Amino acid sequence: MAPRRTPGEKAVDDFLATVPEPQRSTLQELRVMLKKILPAGEEKIHYGVPAIQINGKSIAGYASAKKHCSYFPHSGAILEQMEDQLTKYEFSKGTLHFPVDKCLPITLVRKLITARMNQLGL
Image (cartoon, rainbow, N blue to C red; front, side):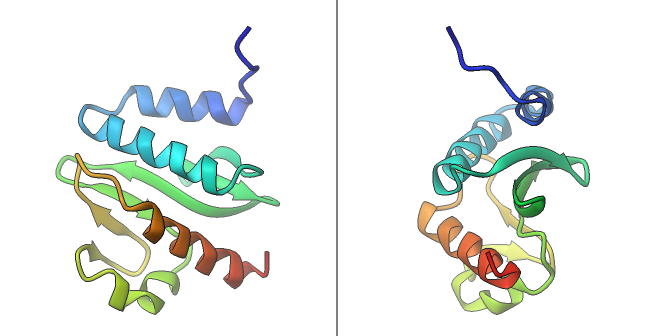
């Protein structure tokens, strides 16, 4: 029997079901990665996009657009702090863009999550 899905997991499943390929597969890969890095994290829809939270605080979010996928660190400072590690990507204060068909490397995602967790004192 399959494990019971939380309302947050179901909402994320429903969100991803509306995303076209190849973005959907790329975001699914990121979702699995986030759950692996943050096994105690809780999936939610936050600000209209899937996010993973710890103690009610969003740590990472993601979504897609026509020409890119986006990673949201839920902080305006994280990407600026890590600018030297993001030279392969386009980013703004709160959004990191990556290709529709190539997920972010797990080492970078771990660094982004660590920076956010440190910022929150978690």
